[in-house]
Picture 1 (cartoon, helix red, strand yellow):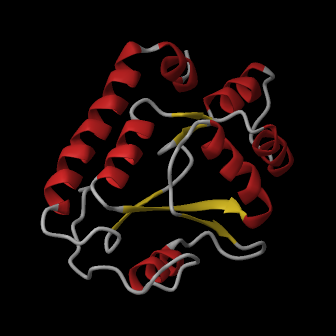
Picture 2 (cartoon, one colour):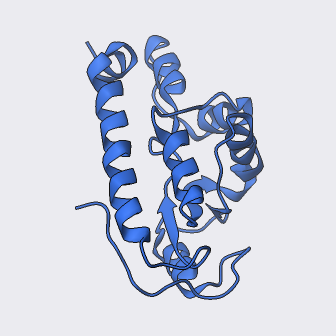
Length: 168
């Protein structure tokens, strides 16, 4: 059995993802204390962090096919990704605490509108989505730096410089 089948059928996978989002929400709630609304942000990836591409992976596996750029682009255009368990509640909680949400993804700029449509269809709130420019490296660090310096689209200046790392 493949890992894809386990993710599809496993109650444990769904419980683990919800648990991780619950822990993240607890950490963000603590980190938000004393911070001005709109002056701090949570940065997340899109794929397999907020939205699931399990259907794409299952379809490719069942057909005996590997990933390809063309099939990926077609998948994104279908706008069929779904939220991971707990993702919507987490995003809503961050906004409720006064945080901003920035999605930093390696999805290409040409795929960004379709990705925004998936977020909208599932009422997944965010303040900015920074996709990778066509033909650029997959290094997200320049986009993370843009968020920290307040130079990302939609920013109203630099964010609170106090940093809290939620992952270890």
